[in-house]
Length: 170
Image (cartoon, rainbow, N blue to C red):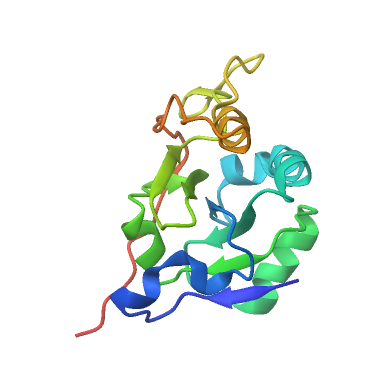
Protein backbone atom coordinates (compact mmCIF):
# COMPACT_ATOMS: atom_id res chain seq x y z
CA UNK A 1 0.00 0.00 0.00
CA UNK A 2 1.34 3.40 -0.95
CA UNK A 3 0.82 6.26 1.48
CA UNK A 4 1.75 9.76 0.46
CA UNK A 5 1.17 12.71 2.77
CA UNK A 6 0.03 16.03 1.32
CA UNK A 7 0.86 18.03 4.41
CA UNK A 8 2.30 21.53 4.31
CA UNK A 9 2.87 21.64 0.58
CA UNK A 10 3.97 24.80 -1.15
CA UNK A 11 1.97 26.03 -4.16
CA UNK A 12 4.61 24.58 -6.53
CA UNK A 13 4.29 21.17 -4.91
CA UNK A 14 0.54 21.05 -5.52
CA UNK A 15 1.17 19.67 -8.97
CA UNK A 16 -0.46 16.33 -8.38
CA UNK A 17 2.19 14.45 -10.31
CA UNK A 18 4.57 14.54 -7.38
CA UNK A 19 2.73 11.32 -6.47
CA UNK A 20 3.11 9.55 -9.79
CA UNK A 21 5.64 7.54 -11.63
CA UNK A 22 3.47 7.27 -14.77
CA UNK A 23 2.44 10.19 -17.02
CA UNK A 24 -1.22 9.12 -17.07
CA UNK A 25 -3.96 11.38 -15.74
CA UNK A 26 -4.73 11.30 -12.03
CA UNK A 27 -8.03 10.25 -10.46
CA UNK A 28 -8.27 11.69 -6.95
CA UNK A 29 -11.20 10.29 -4.98
CA UNK A 30 -11.76 12.39 -1.87
CA UNK A 31 -13.21 10.48 1.09
CA UNK A 32 -13.78 10.78 4.82
CA UNK A 33 -13.39 7.73 7.02
CA UNK A 34 -16.49 8.73 9.02
CA UNK A 35 -18.74 9.46 6.03
CA UNK A 36 -21.33 6.73 5.44
CA UNK A 37 -21.79 7.87 1.85
CA UNK A 38 -18.05 7.59 1.11
CA UNK A 39 -17.94 4.21 2.82
CA UNK A 40 -20.98 3.00 0.89
CA UNK A 41 -19.17 3.70 -2.37
CA UNK A 42 -16.26 1.35 -1.54
CA UNK A 43 -17.45 -1.50 -3.82
CA UNK A 44 -18.03 0.91 -6.74
CA UNK A 45 -14.65 2.60 -6.18
CA UNK A 46 -13.01 -0.85 -6.33
CA UNK A 47 -14.85 -1.71 -9.57
CA UNK A 48 -13.83 1.58 -11.20
CA UNK A 49 -10.23 1.17 -10.03
CA UNK A 50 -10.04 -2.40 -11.39
CA UNK A 51 -11.45 -1.31 -14.74
CA UNK A 52 -9.33 1.82 -15.30
CA UNK A 53 -6.12 1.42 -13.25
CA UNK A 54 -4.06 0.67 -16.36
CA UNK A 55 -5.01 4.08 -17.83
CA UNK A 56 -4.96 6.37 -14.77
CA UNK A 57 -3.09 6.97 -11.52
CA UNK A 58 -5.68 6.52 -8.78
CA UNK A 59 -5.44 7.86 -5.23
CA UNK A 60 -7.91 7.94 -2.41
CA UNK A 61 -7.53 11.24 -0.61
CA UNK A 62 -8.43 11.32 3.07
CA UNK A 63 -9.50 14.88 3.77
CA UNK A 64 -8.96 14.92 7.49
CA UNK A 65 -5.99 14.45 9.71
CA UNK A 66 -5.86 10.70 10.08
CA UNK A 67 -2.89 8.61 11.06
CA UNK A 68 -1.24 6.30 8.58
CA UNK A 69 -2.26 3.24 10.61
CA UNK A 70 -5.89 4.43 10.95
CA UNK A 71 -6.07 5.06 7.20
CA UNK A 72 -4.70 1.58 6.47
CA UNK A 73 -7.18 0.06 8.93
CA UNK A 74 -10.02 1.90 7.17
CA UNK A 75 -8.87 0.66 3.76
CA UNK A 76 -8.68 -2.90 5.08
CA UNK A 77 -12.12 -2.63 6.70
CA UNK A 78 -13.69 -1.49 3.39
CA UNK A 79 -11.47 -3.69 1.20
CA UNK A 80 -10.06 -0.69 -0.70
CA UNK A 81 -6.80 -1.48 -2.48
CA UNK A 82 -5.97 1.96 -3.87
CA UNK A 83 -2.94 4.05 -2.94
CA UNK A 84 -3.85 6.93 -0.67
CA UNK A 85 -2.95 10.46 0.32
CA UNK A 86 -3.70 12.31 3.53
CA UNK A 87 -4.65 15.93 2.83
CA UNK A 88 -5.11 17.21 6.39
CA UNK A 89 -4.48 20.83 5.40
CA UNK A 90 -6.82 20.45 2.40
CA UNK A 91 -4.33 21.83 -0.10
CA UNK A 92 -5.48 19.34 -2.72
CA UNK A 93 -9.18 19.71 -1.91
CA UNK A 94 -8.94 23.48 -2.19
CA UNK A 95 -6.88 23.34 -5.38
CA UNK A 96 -9.48 21.21 -7.14
CA UNK A 97 -12.58 22.85 -5.55
CA UNK A 98 -13.65 19.74 -3.66
CA UNK A 99 -16.38 20.47 -1.09
CA UNK A 100 -17.90 17.10 -0.11
CA UNK A 101 -16.97 13.44 0.09
CA UNK A 102 -17.04 11.37 -1.92
CA UNK A 103 -16.05 13.70 -4.73
CA UNK A 104 -13.61 13.10 -7.58
CA UNK A 105 -11.10 15.21 -9.49
CA UNK A 106 -9.64 13.86 -12.74
CA UNK A 107 -6.49 15.76 -13.64
CA UNK A 108 -4.61 15.57 -16.93
CA UNK A 109 -0.89 14.89 -17.17
CA UNK A 110 -0.61 18.65 -17.91
CA UNK A 111 -2.21 19.36 -14.50
CA UNK A 112 -5.53 20.52 -15.99
CA UNK A 113 -8.82 19.65 -14.29
CA UNK A 114 -10.72 17.39 -16.70
CA UNK A 115 -13.63 16.33 -14.48
CA UNK A 116 -14.86 17.27 -11.02
CA UNK A 117 -17.86 15.84 -9.26
CA UNK A 118 -19.74 12.76 -8.21
CA UNK A 119 -19.03 9.12 -8.92
CA UNK A 120 -22.59 8.52 -10.07
CA UNK A 121 -26.13 9.68 -9.34
CA UNK A 122 -26.83 7.16 -6.55
CA UNK A 123 -27.95 9.96 -4.26
CA UNK A 124 -30.88 12.16 -5.20
CA UNK A 125 -30.36 14.32 -2.11
CA UNK A 126 -28.43 13.91 1.13
CA UNK A 127 -29.94 10.84 2.77
CA UNK A 128 -32.08 9.88 -0.26
CA UNK A 129 -30.60 7.07 -2.32
CA UNK A 130 -31.98 6.06 -5.71
CA UNK A 131 -33.23 2.54 -6.25
CA UNK A 132 -31.14 2.30 -9.44
CA UNK A 133 -28.23 4.36 -10.74
CA UNK A 134 -29.08 6.24 -13.94
CA UNK A 135 -25.82 8.08 -14.63
CA UNK A 136 -22.30 6.78 -14.15
CA UNK A 137 -20.60 10.18 -14.35
CA UNK A 138 -17.06 9.13 -13.42
CA UNK A 139 -17.08 5.99 -15.57
CA UNK A 140 -18.37 8.04 -18.53
CA UNK A 141 -15.64 10.68 -18.04
CA UNK A 142 -12.88 8.07 -17.71
CA UNK A 143 -14.13 6.10 -20.72
CA UNK A 144 -14.20 9.24 -22.87
CA UNK A 145 -10.67 10.07 -21.74
CA UNK A 146 -9.44 6.56 -22.60
CA UNK A 147 -11.04 6.87 -26.04
CA UNK A 148 -9.23 10.17 -26.61
CA UNK A 149 -12.47 12.13 -26.63
CA UNK A 150 -13.22 15.37 -24.84
CA UNK A 151 -15.17 14.75 -21.64
CA UNK A 152 -18.75 15.81 -22.40
CA UNK A 153 -19.75 16.56 -18.78
CA UNK A 154 -16.79 18.10 -16.95
CA UNK A 155 -18.68 18.84 -13.72
CA UNK A 156 -21.45 17.08 -11.85
CA UNK A 157 -22.96 17.91 -8.46
CA UNK A 158 -21.56 15.69 -5.72
CA UNK A 159 -23.76 14.82 -2.75
CA UNK A 160 -22.06 13.71 0.42
CA UNK A 161 -20.46 14.68 3.68
CA UNK A 162 -19.19 18.24 3.89
CA UNK A 163 -15.43 18.64 4.23
CA UNK A 164 -14.26 19.58 7.69
CA UNK A 165 -12.34 22.82 7.78
CA UNK A 166 -8.82 22.29 9.12
CA UNK A 167 -7.95 23.94 12.39
CA UNK A 168 -5.51 26.78 11.78
CA UNK A 169 -3.24 27.71 14.67
CA UNK A 170 -2.13 31.34 14.97
